[in-house]
Length: 518
Ligand code: NAP
Image 1 (cartoon, protein in one colour):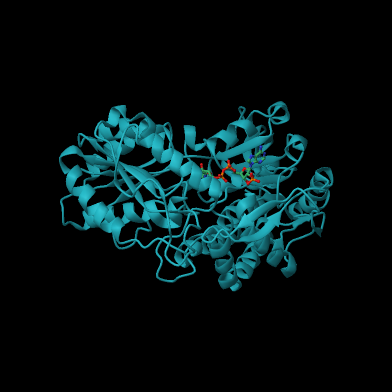
Image 2 (cartoon, rainbow, N blue to C red; image 1 turned 90 degrees about the vertical axis):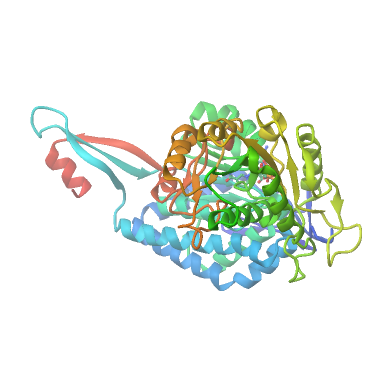
């Protein structure tokens, strides 16, 4: 069994006690253990603040971008090894693991290219300058400078590579040192990523540290220049936000949390059309990819009421083809959920959904997996439920079942009704709409856009190229209002700005133009 280590203060730390056991979710074999006991978190912060921060801030955006490019290459060069680890520790099939691992190297590469374009500057200029008095003797302009603290990244179990890299890319590009803390249960992939990056010797000392295990008193020590970026459940997020020291210091916090994402079938889409086929393909993928353990997965499927029987039949037929089992077997299309706790929570969640909906595919029980020992593994068949009273389907709009589980609901075909039902989710990361009718889509955006971070429109024109609503692309925003956490990640420079301080510079125009290079 492997003992995971933390990388702190420029060396590897191995704990002696307080371990959490890591398992292979397909076999329940114990494969590792992790603990952060014995770490001096004050020293971890000091190492980042005194060494990593100054070293990164001494570089320009273009120079930091070059670091990201080199980091991306290291992860790409070790892709196969990381995919193997992902299968063992998170239960992902090879394609599902690549969504995480290639997502990590791809996002680093994207930010490397973006940073190169920002050039050899120490800070960014935002918007135009403005004359503030009768003459140019007094003039103002906004600039973005690196925050002087530490970026602490607390990540969810489902994306151990991408979750680490997408946050680190933005913070490092901005010039902030990173302390990354993966979810303990699936920390193996992150630990190996950090090990590879440390071995490559790309980053300055103190720029990247890893906590394998709990955060101890780390968060109690954060202050006004630090940033806490959290991804995980809404419950944990609430607890973190309420911490007195973070409130008192106004520590910047970004939260990416639960989401009851909806897929909406437009009333114009006919059976047998390209758009209808895309809708079915996307919904099945977004239910089952990574065994439904994606914050952007489809949880609610809204269908014009007259079409719901036909859609149910088509979805059940496709879901029946999905072979569930040990992802080490190449024929398997969907692996187990990642942990025993995740399985328990999913089964409880299905029970809650059944108060408002009935199962039309799947059993709502644990199942055995192909290629896994009988009675072992956290397997669940793809599970489709159906509710007939969408407005009163309370638990369907409230309970996120973080597994391959979604519920079909009818709506009256209008964009207004769809938007109202989407809104019952309390704020989502993504709403997907399948339509070729721009006016209908426009109405959905106008009425429902405020409640979601992204509207993904699947249509005949996008069918060949669109990656599915679940892909959080670095060019566009990831995050959503309300229950989804209210955070903003990725989206090109949007994600980098989390780690930059916006400030106004005022003075004579000549001076302001001179120092901003205008
Ligand atoms: P979780 O239980 O909230 O844990 C998330 C992270 O928080 C883990 O690293 C966990 O560490 C840590 N943590 C828990 N309690 C903590 C505390 N008191 N202080 C400091 N850290 C603490 O969530 P999860 O089960 O890993 O992830 C599933 C959830 O994440 C789902 O609800 C999903 O929707 C959400 N998610 C959202 C996004 C998004 O981008 N919006 C992406 C992925 C997942 P330990 O593992 O050591 O407990």
